[in-house]
Length: 552
Image (tube, rainbow, N blue to C red):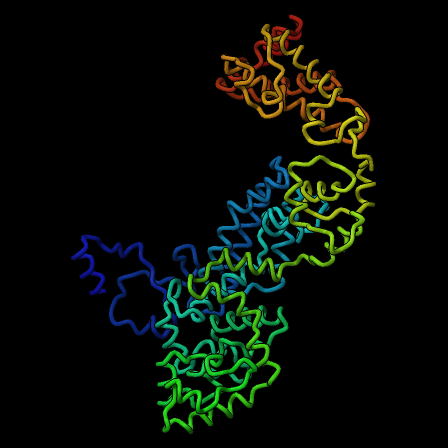
């Protein structure tokens, strides 16, 4: 407290003792404080920078994760009634809730339990599909757009990326995110990389309850097991501080070895997994004549390791993933992308085989990346219909599913049967669709009393300047005209039925009645309603117009 007081005297800041909390790691420490304690004692935990801290690390998981589940459930319940699309719900989760989860996982070394991952994914799926039966499996929504997903975060892989960033500090010998000095003192005399390689039964008893060590060992085994590797032997196995190689603890010869940057086991191994010869180590200046006993100890240790594991150690795919991060530092976003590419839930081989079967081409002839890159600029045809549905739903639809959705095999427009059914054709350039838009625009011209250009930019893309209207209310009215026109076209998207002008006219009037009800709540909304719908109201009969205006 004297140090805080001295700091305040120099800095000009004053410590507010009434609002400051202290957390005792044990009741003995709390009761043994001499004299009155100037701060308030926290009963069981307190929140610091968004994280709930507790005296015992064993309850950190439940306290923080349960709190996140409660806040997530409240947000999902509050957002569920909102009229949002699938993409809108995913974006809402990514912007509001996901940063809270990611922040906690980055600050605390917690490995999420499988049941909690399942519970979270279940809540997320229920929210994304509005409580209805999911139309696409959740794992198809994971990943970036370029990989066929919708940007939904995969929590297991994000969890793995956050923990690997902790471990990356030791792999790269950097100190960007964690206080390595304190951790070295806590785990001394053993090196933490040695502890993650050591089987649980061989760990020192005082370290078995360490939350950090447990989480790092879990992520280490999770990634290595995914590659059929051996978590106990990798190219990052240290020589000094090795729990299973006791001479590496204190012997001066091995301290000298470390001073020459021979710190890992791979530094003294040949390409076939065998130890470098005594002559080679002496010529390189690593060992001198007096270090022959240390060489024999190292030779005996290497011979005790399985040869198959040593061969994997030299050709380590795990190292191929991590080595690029050793120089530039480990980032959660970079690790997540690599993990999703290598460990993601999508079975790419099965998808590849299904695409080849549906497209009727040989496996070697399918160039999927170039096919996906061409999709935005091509029209629907017999070969690319699967790709179009892949883009629209970000999932895999079999032929039976396409059949039940009403999709026709012909690539031609089902309305004019003349041109391919591309998006611009379906919304605008089709002869029969074009006729519908001209009917709509002719009616609007009679309402506004002015000639309007027949513009796709204005009607389809809400480019108000294309109509050259100076009145803001008329511009807002034209926006409603375009939106309702597209809704009518989408209502008869697949099939020979043509969009009806009278369907559009009825939708326009229904929208008027809906906005009239909203306008009755405040004077500002009433003024906005009259500015937008003024021209349309005067096109109605006097009785209909008076009924609407009198209800405001």
